[in-house]
Length: 202
Ligand SMILES: C[S@@+](CC[C@H](N)C(=O)[O-])C[C@H]1O[C@@H](n2cnc3c(N)ncnc32)[C@H](O)[C@@H]1O
Image 1 (cartoon, helix red, strand yellow):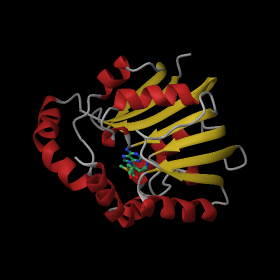
Image 2 (cartoon, protein in one colour):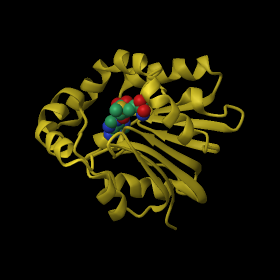
Image 3 (tube, helix red, strand yellow):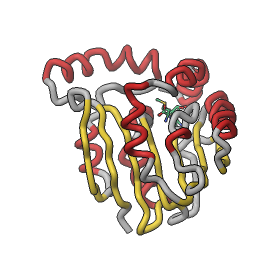
Image 4 (cartoon, rainbow, N blue to C red):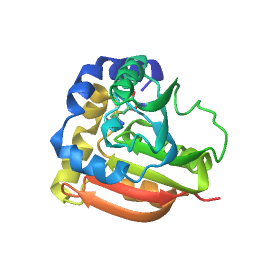
């Protein structure tokens, strides 16, 4: 899918992402993941700022990245609601250039599904993260249930057309082929949702 088309798709979904911020199904998982964030935090695919209420705001300074101007605007409002120290960059992750080793924590939630080359994106995360830093991911991918994964594969073209993201990513394979050193992986909801804590490779 062309980038401009994908950006428009996410621009149009901003209200939905604002409404989903309070989604109780994700609340416990976001809390479990985000409480590990500290220091200079890079949150990629920041969306409408759904993670902001879970950060320890006295312990983090956020740089939020998203290619959708509407999402960035919404995330800015949410950051000010929580009085977060935050700045934002509107940029495509594939074009984004940042200093290596400049963040203590890299966060990505429900976003790896949208990137054309998720392994290359994880390699960028690794380079931007300090050697003793942490990479925190909450992602969705193929279920371990054969019927569900079959359905995910069948509906993926339609899913991508309407939402701008894939529902059939093999997260196990992506993580295995990436340069991340995994500390912990937990899976939820028929193994569709992954919580991952990892370290960069230096
Ligand atoms: C599925 S939403 C997830 C939003 C948020 N992280 C959450 O947990 O609710 C994916 C976000 O990533 C952004 N995104 C997708 N592809 C991107 C890219 N190539 N570069 C920058 N942002 C991107 C979208 O605009 C959207 O805000």
